[in-house]
Image (spheres, helix red, strand yellow):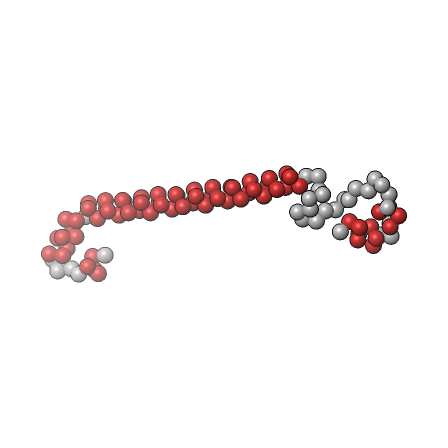
Length: 96
């Protein structure tokens, strides 16, 4: 990529010099001096995504458990009222 860029700029003689250091690198190029750091960033992001997914699943489980408990408590508190309404002739559809 760098050689193509220098050729397009008309600097072929610069390519042949001994101190040539590329300026632009392709994604994942091992010649890039900081390629180890970019690989570490990718693995760190992947780990954070996994942790975020686990936290999301745990949070959803806690929310569903809480909703079930609150609903059961509400039904237990209103059992007598529901029984009285059924005794008076109300249907389940009307009670809900």
